[in-house]
Length: 249
Ligand code: G3P
Ligand code: MG
Picture 1: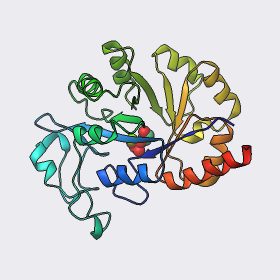
Picture 2: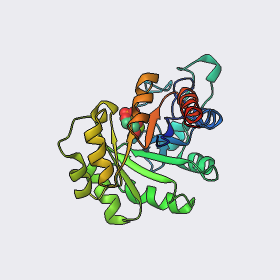
Picture 3: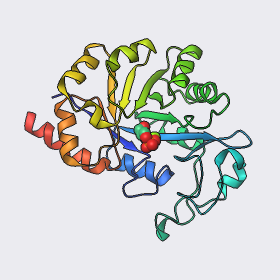
């Protein structure tokens, strides 16, 4: 059986406040092989790590990241809504995140959150950061905005891209080749099918599925030879991967 990579979705977001440094540290402690995170740009041009366009769900603040300055964002508490014990946890900026992952030999999946807001030069600026931190071999960029993934390839064809999608796209491997993507990042039910997985893998395109939190689906996707499994529970997936390796031996 091909070993699937254990990719922590927004860090260890099942047990810690999503997209925060503690969630990233705890994911690494749990034995993940990679981290998935999401990025936006503030009103004054800082790249920050957060899932939503707006801050009200995950922090004690209000408003959209694009309308808030970096200083305003940094004052928000991104832990308190998850639990009192996480009080005074801040939204990380891209440098805190990259500085943390740079020497850990992780797969780093940075999702550009530019499906709703087309942040100016986000692609170019993230690519510059990838080089600044020497993370080219580790990073795969992804987005639901496939125009953005084409733009990444136009800027630098050696940067890896993954196409996020949730539908059952017909001959999706042909589409991926058309836009020069290195990987597909489907919502996992779209690839729970041996023939579809085979077509994609025969085209030399990797598959990293989101968001897989139930053990039975983790096991099935591993049997199918999925390259990367994005999960809120890297501890559970680590146990399942370790068990499957013991069975093979
Ligand atoms: O990148 C996988 C997954 O994060 C995509 O959806 O909404 O959780 O960012 P979302
Ligand atoms: Mg994401």
